[in-house]
Image (tube, rainbow, N blue to C red):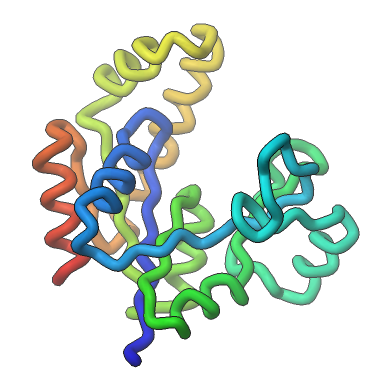
Length: 186
């Protein structure tokens, strides 16, 4: 059995990354198994440990950080951690599947640095900041102040795009899905 590869996706919020990943999974022609992230937040109703997240206590999460068990982690809010366990990636790769990571730019670049050529990093670019603004406003889920913060973060994230193996502009979903599929198959 051949070991799988790591496929890392990163993008600013509203770029269509999740839509592209879901479209690739629906096509079914690429072996993609999602890495289950770890968190120290309590499970929500209907969430199962090891399926939705690995739910760790704060002391356990911090001990695993200290032990170097995470390939990437982030303190998203004060005291609230999310991360990717090295053991989870290794489990998926050893079973012969490709491991898909949907993570922020700093985490993505760290995983790429750790795994080198075994990892393919793909950055999904919005067609531009104006289009990204339109998409975020079109969701109707956030106040204007949060949209401005997301746009500022998006610009910061886009500055990292050249450090990724490949960049795909999502200005046409069908074309973007086909382009990402071709990159992965290569």
